[in-house]
Image 1 (cartoon, one colour):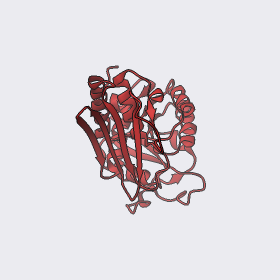
Image 2: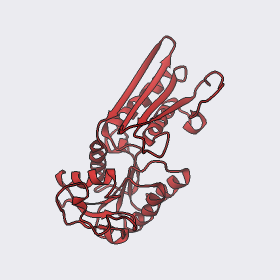
Image 3: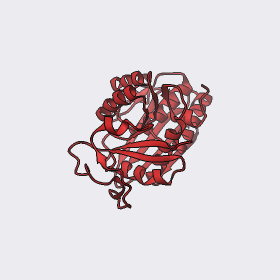
Image 4: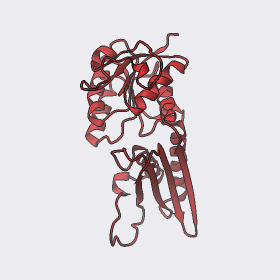
Length: 271
């Protein structure tokens, strides 16, 4: 069977460089395209040398349609606006789209869902296999404990991160809400300042910390009367996200069009 042909968005960025380096070492995959914004100084450069590696012959371009014309999967850790634009192209070309972009609005998600009518889309707020297993555990714990146990999600990332709560924190919050059979949007407490009054029963709280070079720390706390349960995950390098995204890309082969999550990739959902 031929290798799965991958295109990486944001090839000159932190995640992009990790992906470009990891793909050649992953059995069953090959890098065929590397994308960047049209004003990026990386345009025209060999994508392999951007992170200090060896040349790989894949030149960075801003022409998404040309890069995707001979591709099987697009791996996308970019910005919401860019992801939405790319979703329209992957849908038209029937190229699978693995999305790790965070900060997506409800309108963005609607566009992505529409694109999934014509192609395979795997979207997750975190591509780490460990985080997605944690999400399954959080859902089970929330279901077993119920709203009598207060749920709080604490996350910390590097000082350059632009969105809060993180996509992973929201993913975990959604898992807790599913476990309780409620909508997160109706039971989410994201900011506390000043005289807030007692904690509202049934809320799922979020606290966001930023500083240094932290890749990603997440803890879900279930606080009951006289006891606490804490479920945590710590990412030590971005390679965990790259490996998860590549695993998702491999998983898309032969799948029917639709919107999937990393829980599907891990076999945690019945389809």
